[in-house]
Length: 125
Image (tube, rainbow, N blue to C red; front, side):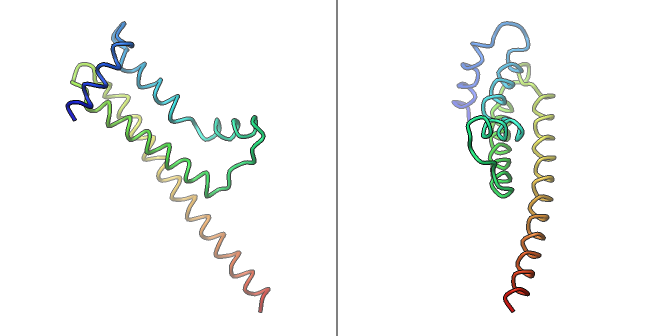
């Protein structure tokens, strides 16, 4: 972990002007690796790809939340004065809220799949 933390500190050299360097690096990483689902949907539409299915969107949100978690862990390794504690806390709250929403979407998707299966079994019989 020490080497990993040292890598983050080296990365912070580019963002070393002012006290907000860690915050700016955190925001840059989030923008690059954790786009909001609406942005992903718009990018797919702009490039002519079909929208993601609900299951694929849930998977995408999980991957984004995992990237958020890794970024939070990365910044948690920094020493006290440069560690953006407030931003890490906000990031963890976002992950938790998205996880709850994803679970609810999965449950809803499961209910709809069960309804479709029962409807199709009625049609088959």
